[in-house]
Length: 308
Image (cartoon, rainbow, N blue to C red):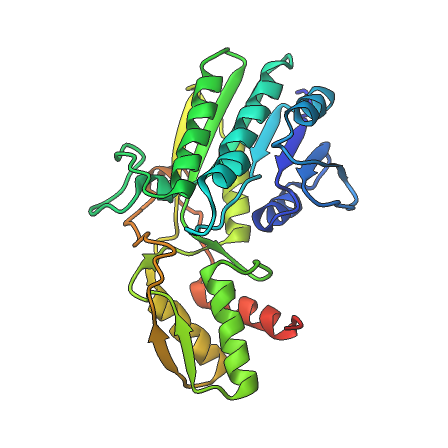
């Protein structure tokens, strides 16, 4: 059996780092990221996928047979412009598939997409549910999926799979994400003996997934034999947690009591979805996500050790 030539884009990002650790082994592992990455067992290229000519040249040199496409802008905020989301998500994907189209041989691509493409809906969400992107972020992810779908239909050599992710979290996540932002606020309150924390809306809920579990799920999906050109999986943990409960859990870990002031600045209108991820779990029934409290505990300990 020929050796796979595996490429990970966004390898220096939050989820990318976990995936690189999961994939490291005997096969060649190629990575692309905005920042340098020196790690035994990988061949890294520092570039931005928005740069078409550099991306095409890099793909031509690597000639990957598997691509985990994680690169892009994942922070959801109304302060980020439509052009920024388009460049960071859709344009990157288009440049990637254009580069892959110019290579020879088979190739399978996994796109890390988002459940945000469904928008705010009631009822159970499956892969067949209507797409209703309601934010620039969600729309850029939808367009990225369309780039990949068109690519998969151009040749029998190509297979593509989109994984629509619920919220990923874990230790080391940057600011701009709910769990990491809350942990920093709780740390500030504890260190400075504050009596109140101000947050955004607390009623929305998420199905939080540890980023290391997501990396493992990606590997399972890519190793699965795929008969159709284009496949979609929803990925979410079974537990639905409100933003309020997430904050409460962190306050318990910090062993502090503070008043909570909730203000809606309108930065993220996504309320949450009921995503059982039945398709994924039917194929991998033994797969499980680590408990919320376990990951939150690691986030809290990491935040305590990180200089403010």
